[in-house]
Image (cartoon, rainbow, N blue to C red):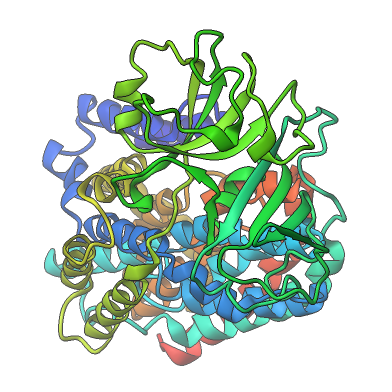
Length: 585
């Protein structure tokens, strides 16, 4: 019955028509109904320290992003590379290092806009970079205990198995224990993605659908920021890709936007940009919308809203430069204007508004109350996922994250304790609001992690793990090395079919039975499980970061297989050769 339940679960995951969390909750429900394990054992994942640690790390990553700490570090490390070879070095190496200390899913989510900005400003082909971003983050995550959720889950399962008497002679897995094979595997992956892998990647631009996009005219002023005193070339605006720098005005005088022009505080920059590029300009540190009413809240609390002007709006017939009207109840910043899907040619200060004009505005929460009668706008739509970063808290966020890593690495605090303290410090330090802290946690992932661990109880309790381990043992002929290879191959195959945590959890019980029957240490098996569950390079659905880069890179399924199969063979060889040597049977 347990085997049938696992086959059905895998089939639903491969079918990919139902949410993953629903498939796992359904599997837990069936296992409970069939009494394949006790309710307490099936729900033990939600008290697993690894699962709770993963949940606590989400606000830490969110705090690093919300304060601009990641953006500032990325700009310092990456800059504006002149070639793809330089871009790979400047992006992949820092990502490999950072993913060892930040959960790789939020890290990739934070890096996608940064890489997109680099490709947009330099004209480099993003399809040559985005897949490598995901793969290197996966590899770097195998270096430490907190690089990926799998490492934390396996470490938690080891602790539970030791406490339950299922394992002996195995101590707690340390913060840097996985690094002995994680670092060499990551270096091998880096070399491959910078050489052979880059040649196998397609030369393809994302989003070429043939659909004409609405374009906006948008005008920003340079504030007293890091842009002040830098040339257009240095900030990546000399040869923009995907948008156009229409003009540069200083003290009422129009300047030719040449690469050598040095920006000054108060400069007015006018752009023509499509709708999907506009939020990227809005979030650029140092640029502030030129036309605004008085805003009483801080900009990191604002959001973007797309609006269409109603015929009843008092602003009809007025120039943008005349706004706001004296009796206007709205507090907003005008980010961009479009008419009939096109960007106006004249300066916004001289542009007369008409009914049906589309605009993108920066607003606070009071806007939605003031517009509740919908008399000024016939359409309002929130543009989710875009926030101005609060850079005045960037140093605070960085110090909190470094302190968390140091406290956990030297053993002063457990990883769970350090992560919880860091999450609270992000809140108390002003890096996150309570609302953003709560929303930063991917609760669906937490549900999946807890349910996957619960299924392991059914696999072990029903005797299925012992049967599979016996089969693997027979194939290996009593050789620990062959058993280790079987565990790695099985984990890699499963992680490219279903979720990586589910693959690791299902293979965990098999690996425990194998190591016990062979009378060898479980530590090499635990390390191989951690690595194999992160080597989801063949199937885009094998790990969420692969799916996250699919649209920006314009990839199809065959792209992942073509690049991922050789990468899996290379890093797999490194892991299997080193694990028995450095961890010893």
